[in-house]
Image 1 (tube, rainbow over the protein chains, first blue to last red):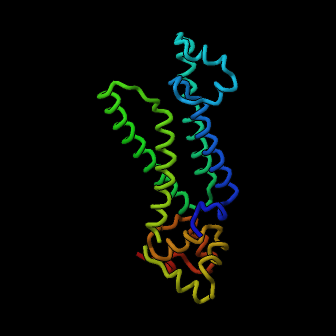
Image 2: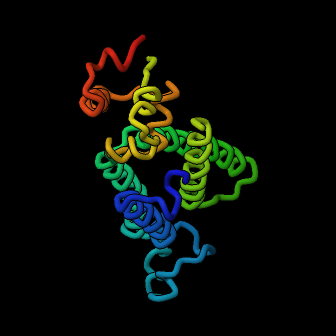
Length: 149
Length: 62
């Protein structure tokens, strides 16, 4: 049975995956960079929209700081997992997958940056980064594991 | 680093899963070490040596 399979996860792995899922949700909830994107917080608390899109200095700082929180949370989850994982082989696989995830995210950022410059249309990179990072890391983990078969 | 884990395991009629359970690692870890594609850390090598009651150098060689 493959590693990190739903039926084959240790409690630590299961907990870390759940926390990573929370980090993805957190990314959506803290994304106030574009009023056109859905944000459940704004559906529940519509009065927030008036404040976060007001572009006052305080609102700009608050929106910027909020965007950092899910990234720090994801880094904390990964660090906590790697520190506690007793299986060094699995640890090595996860580190390699994380590095591939970061590499793909950086490449995606470069492409998105170029496209945004060419077409002059901004896009919330936080959401793009989160999607790219989590999907690329997941696929990279399976590929890295497959390479050891 | 080469090793004779497969032979030692076969002598005791242990499966990879049995050895993995005794070491507290995944079966994939045992497979990767056996095939020489992953070199274990010193603590894990010591655990293997203790489990097989052999010196490390008789399990692993260059």
